[in-house]
Structures are given as C-alpha cells and as structure tokens.
Length: 228
Image 1 (cartoon, rainbow, N blue to C red):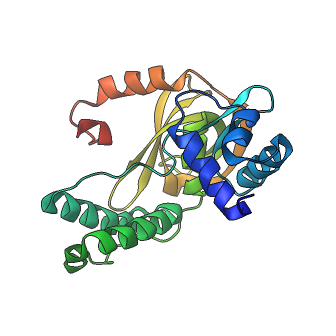
Image 2 (spheres, rainbow, N blue to C red; image 1 turned 180 degrees about the vertical axis):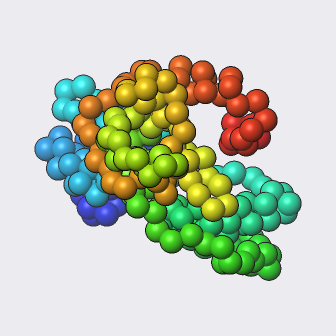
C-alpha cells in the first residue's frame, strides 16, 4: 500500500486530470487501497483546505484553478509578472501579499533574472478595516456582506451588499457591489467601512449578470484582468 503522503499526491493528480467526477471505488482501484481508505484520505485533504468537491456515491472533482498547470513564458513576460507581483504589496491586502510572495519565490527559482527587478515599498497602505482575503472569498462564493459604511459627510448606515469586484488603487481599495438598501450598483471605499459581517446568505447565479452590467458603465475608467 502506498504511503499516505503518496496517496494524497496521487488523489490530487487524478482529480486534476479527470474530465468527470471520479467515484471512490475508481480511485481505490487505481491506488490499490480500500474504498474506506479513499474516503478517509479525501476527508483529510478537505480538512487541509484542498478544494475537493463531491460526496460518497456521487463522485469527486477538483475545483478549477487549483495548482495551475505550467505556463511557458518569454523573458519579457516573466519580468512583467515579477514587477506585478512586487506591486501587490501596494494593495493593502495581506492575503495577496503572502500569495504574491509564494509566487515570486517560484518565479525566481524558474527565472533567476527576475530578482533584478525590485519595486519600492513607499506608499504601502496599512491593513484595511475589513479582511480582504475573506472578501475575495465572498466574491468567489457569491455570498452577501453586511457593512457599516460612512459617507463623505461621516454619516454611518448599515448596508447589505452583494460584493462583485474589487478595484485596487494605489492608495485605496473599492468594492463594486449591489446595494440592497439603494437597489442599485454602488462603489464602496474600504477606508470608509467601519465594520463588516460576512453572511451565509448568497446571491448564487446573479453575479455575472451584475458584473456585465457594471462593465458596460465603465468604458475606460478601470483596467481589468479581462482586458489583457
């Protein structure tokens, strides 16, 4: 029987390569272990935040985007990514800082010349009043957020919003969201949020249409990764 570490690696690889959900018995056959062992291994991987989706009897899949496949880059592309990763420190998003640091180390190992490109830490903002890592997760999951928001006149209101997009400026971050109070798309500055509560309520299936509606109003006002 292969070791637990080896099984974990093989399960991840099998799920990444699969074109359809895999049943536990299929995985057990390949790994030459019992179905019960596969169930235990998958439960352990899920507990370690590995994005395996599914359940017994239905099958398992790996969420798209986990451990992206290798990309062939030329020198200019590698240098552009290196500078972009360095600039992530300006966003004030600790979760992105850490992810950018990990990605930078991998890039430096593959392309040592990128170490010659360094960005200044001048102007780096302090940690924002709301957890941006959780906010990005809420955007991906299409779950709602309650915020206590101060307007330009320092008046505070409670809003339930559907977070759709984050706009990173040099000195601030803006949330594009559907506001239930105003029944319209609004922009909310992170530095004006006094507090926030992440909710379980969701707006599944409605985010893409709202983002498309917002994009039609923007023209050349913002630059999105979609533009590249």
